[in-house]
Image (cartoon, rainbow, N blue to C red):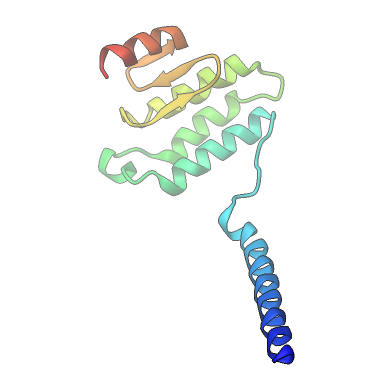
Length: 130
């Protein structure tokens, strides 16, 4: 009887340990690597690549995304301000001509058809069309 209780307890402990190890191993699969960077070039490359891999209407809209890259990449410099970077990335995204593709920052919002909208203006627009 005592032996069965010890064996049952050991099984629970073993299963708990296996579960913890399994879940911690999934961390790399479930969560993306933290790609935060203050480098304008890294941010440009990341945004362009995400669009390239995930945006599905290039062919339908006849957008040559590689050509967009070739036009915008030379404009990205390591010494540009975050406002300049934001404006350039917003311009690049507007090439998609898509109302559902927006760029948000703590200091600005960029979406198709509108450039350089302050957050306070965006808040008013959001409240009006809610």
